[in-house]
Image 1 (spheres, rainbow, N blue to C red):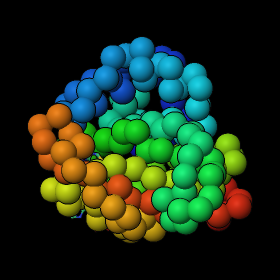
Image 2 (cartoon, rainbow, N blue to C red):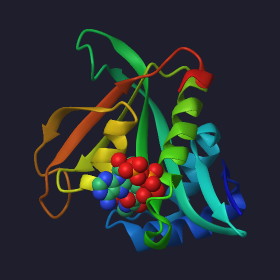
Image 3 (cartoon, helix red, strand yellow):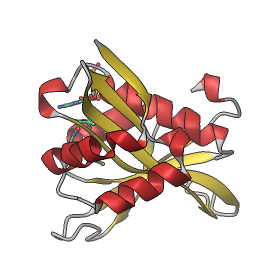
Length: 162
Ligand SMILES: CC(C)(COP(=O)(O)OP(=O)(O)OC[C@H]1O[C@@H](n2cnc3c(N)ncnc32)[C@H](O)[C@@H]1OP(=O)(O)O)[C@@H](O)C(=O)NCCC(=O)NCCS
């Protein structure tokens, strides 16, 4: 049975493994633990039969709006999301992102944003489907020199409206 639920500290090792299998952007386990402790409402896992097959982790930041240049706002940053290859295209990425966006609203965020490789069509399509728009290009954002799109969307006032 598949379930999308809040991550616990006991999930972090499996989350780190999923990250290594799915993405070239890897972080120390302490980085995952730190974000989980600070922002538990935006750290979710997808579990199938007791095994973690996907995760999303985010951070709440304070800064310039990506949608309206004049305002300083609280915004949610999707730091990392991944689903194991054998479980993709089953709606888990969507469910993880929805849950994390609701968590951002709980923290008072007005917008959500993220960076994505310009070549990462599956992720870009998922984000577009979830209301994100491409706002700008960050040249050579990744260590291998690839550019990133910065994508952003407005968040509703109520978590249940995501
Ligand atoms: C991006 C990722 C998390 C999507 O997870 P997922 O569970 O497959 O996503 P979903 O099943 O919810 O797909 C939602 C929508 O995204 C789009 N999408 C997903 N995979 C796609 C693909 N391979 N090609 C085109 N569109 C795709 C589709 O619009 C899809 O809806 P549909 O299946 O009804 O057509 C997954 O591909 C992944 O882990 N990729 C590797 C890690 C990664 O790139 N993370 C993002 C870093 S910024």
